[in-house]
Length: 509
Image 1 (tube, rainbow, N blue to C red):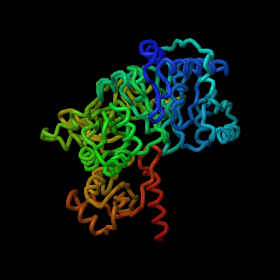
Image 2 (cartoon, rainbow, N blue to C red):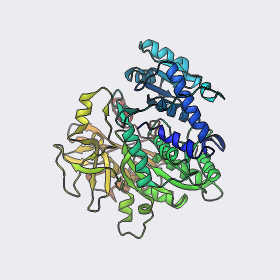
Image 3 (cartoon, rainbow, N blue to C red):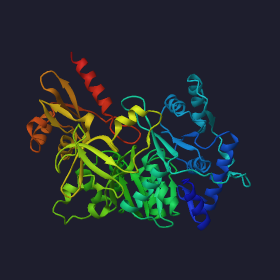
Image 4 (cartoon, one colour):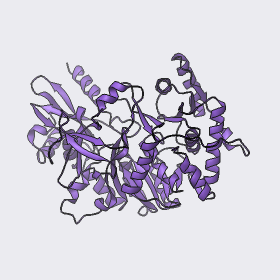
């Protein structure tokens, strides 16, 4: 099926239902949403874009983003959403690698992207004028037929260890992602609200799909990004409002909510994920913001759909292992299988630590034109996530670390998250990230980067850490920093921390 069929159906059934809002103002209803998508599809076809061609979206969050994306699908093409905060050279590389025929861009990025494309000899056409979609009587293209296994969304990974890879998601995966939200996170009724403070180009953007399917309202903040006070105000304005937030966004939301005169209003669900949410942080969020949190764990290769900790579990404080479950990433979502495997791919018993592996129709079709990487990542039908975790007897999954982030000191595995959790219980520790440093005697030693609310000594942190974890796990070195380096989705860049640590060693020699 063509995923754009969902928009066509919502427009037929609920033409006057509000579809997209910009801040507190309705931008278009469903009838106009579908018309703008069909006009976009017609315009794309006039530029030579055919079914299966790739079209880049290199734009900040804006109301125009959604009809452009659905117009790409409407004409049978493949959307390639690119993080708007990337450099034009990085976006040009993605456009060239995907062999995109055209790129929709913001005005201010057009010339820079054109120059970068010329330097790469890439033939991608750059388009900053999107007025064609709003012509009162503009021509429209009929919805083009597509199959379930035709590519629809080409998602490029963050590329923290090299060039990003293009994750191929077909209509089958996008449909499964939307249905997984409805089955595992929450239902969506007509008029329910999804706010988009997180980038529409990333996993959070996929959460607009069930809202189009069920004629909900998608709201783009006026800031076109995440302002915690704005997010709280929009929830209060629109009511029954949900949104996706990385853990760093939740932290900022809690800080903002503390300054508001009353408890947040109008919230349905804040879905958090995309990085580790520490136990102390989610407990504080529940206290300050209220019973509105659910957690998901996923990857671009299995978008937003590996596991879920639903609100019912988050709020089940009477359960004897509530805090243990709250520290987990929940249980497998409805349409996936999860198991823990050793390096040979053999399934491990309950409670043992190994690599998290996933099997589902929701797993990507593969990496774009990279069969070698695809074969390495999907083995015998199972996605090798590269994440380390364990399952308990009740099927709850604890996410320990990326396998590449695990520290092996003296032949013993040390999981940075465990050390981070311990340090974060100190009331004056705001943020922390732990890495391994190569060491000639131990193989690796633990190093912690710490953001403090007020000055702390190494001795204080050592004592606090030793009161909670084994001595061999405590950091051997501390860096006190004003902020942790993060990517545009709020994930801490441990590669940069390793560079900073190495530079500090050179400076001391």
